[in-house]
Length: 96
Image (cartoon, rainbow, N blue to C red; front, top):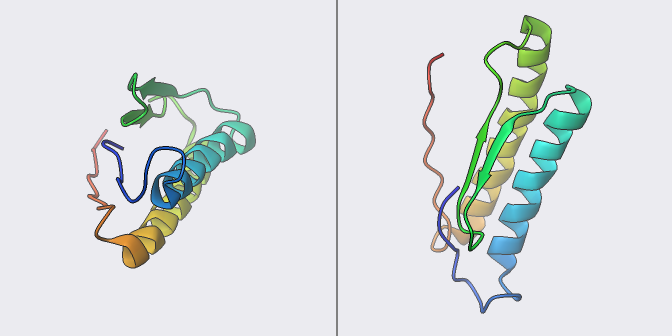
C-alpha cells in the first residue's frame, strides 16, 4: 500500500481511514486466526505498507491466510468501486 488518498484533509479522509481499517483488520485477522507473525514495513508518514508472510507456513495455515487476504482484496475493490478517483488497486502476485 503506497501513497495517500487525498480525499479530504488529514484526519478527515474517509477513504484513507476506511482503507487503513480494512488493511490492519486483515493483518490482525491473519496474525490472530493463523497464529502467524509476518514482516510488516511501514513508511514514516503512514503512506506506505508492505506485508509479507513467512515462507515456511504449513499448507493449512497458508490456505487460511490466503482466504483472509483474499477478503482484504474484495474489501479494497469495494472501496475502489465507490472512490476510484482516490484509490487504485493494483494486484501483483508474487510466486514463491
